Image (cartoon, rainbow, N blue to C red; front, side, top):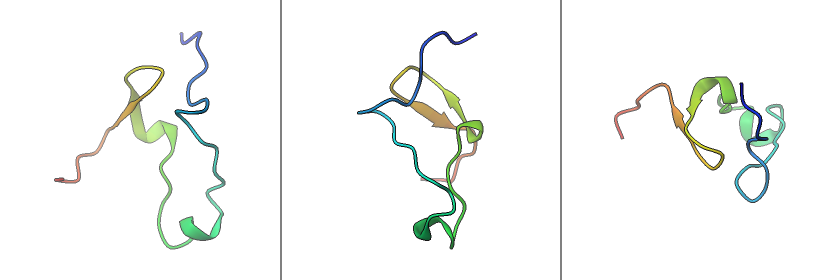
Length: 49
């Protein structure tokens, strides 16, 4: 159980997935990755980069 709030400034930013810049592609959601620490997370999928 995580007892520390994740994604708070300056490490995180809340953005609506319905905003214009996300309409042409999918947005990155917390469930898409593994939380590594209170400052970072790692994508579950590898895109080859």
